[in-house]
Image 1: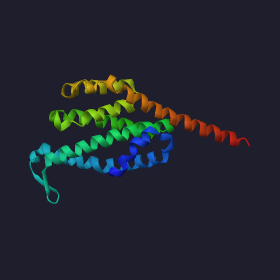
Image 2: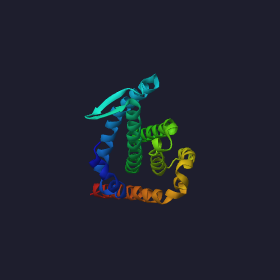
Image 3: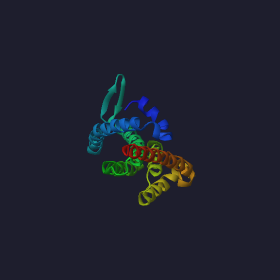
Image 4: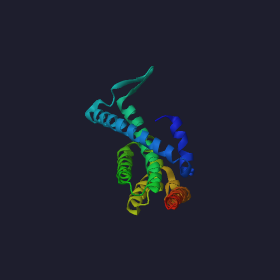
Length: 202
């Protein structure tokens, strides 16, 4: 996914009812990227665990890095992708709450973020500095109280590195605005469907 695509996400979140087609399109791109990125991540992790972490890789002329460094960079990218995807997924669920595939994908994003938070803990603080933002994004995106509690416990663990800025109370305002955006989308879809049924009577 290109940086240009990332640049659209703030506007998509603020006004999803105006950009539903764009959100769906970007979400599909992200799903395709995950299908490519996950196997790469697994291969890099396997190489590091087998003792090849210090092997040098040519990652673009003239830049050379060890397998361990490439793995850390790929994990950060993958975690951020998951956090953006779980936000877009939540918006799409507001537009189509009956879509079970969205629910399953949301579960996958949550599991991946939690797994990365556990796996990257050994690289704290600087090597895992992206993890709290990913946990916060998942907390904002989800309404499941059990999952939110799990995210809060993980954030509390990371709080020793980054301070009270990671407490859920510090981003309740973000959650409120995100929920309002989802409500706007849901209401706009309801109004549209009601209009369709009115026209159908004629």
